[in-house]
Amino acid sequence: MLSDKILDFYAELLDETISYSKDHSVGTLLAFNNVFVSYLQEAGVTNLADCEIINFKKTADKIRLDGYSYSEYFHSLTLLISDFNQKTKIEKLGKTDIDKILKQAVKFYRSSKTEYFGESEESGEGYKAYEYIKQYSEETEVINIILITNNEAVLYVPKDMVVGKTTIKFDVWDIERLYQCLFQNVQAAQVVIRLKSKYSKPLHLIKVADENPAYDCYIGVISCELLAKIYKDEGQKLIERNVRSFLQATGKINRGIRDTLSSEPYMFMAYNNGISTIAESIEIDEEKSTNELAVITVLNGWQIVNGGQTTASVYNAYQSKTDLNRVSVQIKLTVIKNEEKTSEIIANISKYANSQNKINMSDFSANDEYHIRMEQLSRNTYIPADRGKSLDRWFYERARGQYLVEVNRQPTPALKKQFKEHNPKSRCISKTVAAKCIMAWRGFPHIVSKGLETNFIIFSEMIKKGEISHPSEEVYKDMISKVILFNECDKIIAEHKFGGFKAQQNYYTIALIGKYFSDKVDSDFIWSTQSISPAIAQIIEKVMYLVWNHFMNPTTPGVNIGQWCKKADCWELLQRRFEKEEL
Image 1: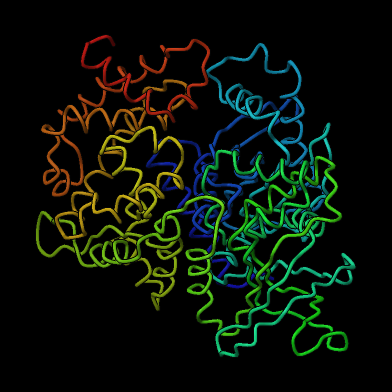
Image 2: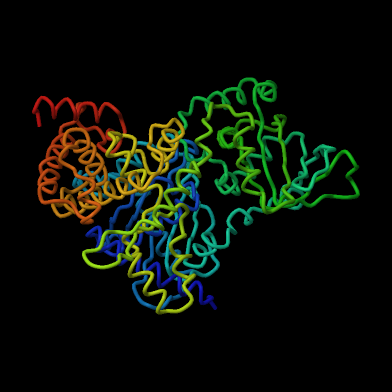
């Protein structure tokens, strides 16, 4: 039996989906997928970072796909498929239903290996997904197929399967699991490593003598073969708190690690900096342990907070049949005793631990001061009213789920309704979406095209460097005006049905307006009216056609437009073409 809180969350999610559908002029299934995935992205589900949401379905062939993404960091492809319930009552999703839905995504992947899409329309969503999968086919080592649903799924996830030489892993996110992830923070606690009973290899680590109330620390080595086997079983769940999961690594370091493992395994310990890990608790074989040496049999809530790249590379070498039997890597294990300081300790380990790549401090921070101040401004800045006192506001969501928490804090149904009237979900803006709108306006459409997470990292760096204005009421209102401009641009482009690359067309249209028509955009007018002028709407319509013509005429015929949009030369060429009136 689901709790009342989960039932309320279901109703809120349904309302948000309907609002998204109306605001973005898309179907409810597409709206649901965008809303649900945005929650998972904000919660740190790494294999859905920068997921491209689509709506492809061939009922007669029993093939369907709702989204896709690729992680260069993990060499993993993620395919998304959904089950959306529009009814007011939650239904049960059984084992047979789960298998049936997931098989449609598996069939899409299998079909991408054949000539199935050969005759498809090249601008179609299915063909673009096929082209995307094909582009990364040789590098892909693992495929994650994820089912999302607002129904209640039975406790069942299909076993891994192998297609060709590639392992396919499955996962299921239902309404209850999403609620737990957002509001009960249970995700990391799911990782329990039974070193003795499952792997027959307990860890022998030296306990650091320093006693303190915050944590215990252990150091030593872990067999690379054991590390690879654990990663094979647990996957990216081990590295959910390693912020570098979101970064698009070049792969050069990974190849260097694999080369060392293959050609000079005896040098691996000397060349590698090791891994830093945390655990919520551990179990120790007391009989075999001493005061100095702990024989650890179970790791509860184990996370790799630094060294994710090493772990993934060791796993890749293991999959390539490299002999890791005599290769080990250094390990530091921090067992956190003070739960209140868990997040702080993890952040500081990530910041200060040695790493193979240079990583800026901003990679590990959303720059709390900036976002806290924006949050405060949103709660105290009211939209101008035509008459009388204004009670309407935008709601800046510094952390995903804040809006729902605030709604549910209202003590009565009447007050809850009143709150939603003055703070509608359509005016709830997350920090990543705000960053997207600002960065597009400032002339970085190629960076925004790389995805919300990548864009947010760059945005955070700019905040740290002082390149983004410090929050004030004026800065806050200007940010909201850019969000409104972006949303209106999105609606206008959607109405014209160009047939693909709508997100990128939005980014580049806003960027072109920001550079060449900024004097026509009156932020004060947009803020006071909460809308754009007809003149700006006309500029959007003019510019969006120029951007589309640019996309349809790349410098290299046949190039993947979605990938081209991520490159700076795409933006630079658009500016040159605009200035020379070549569009």
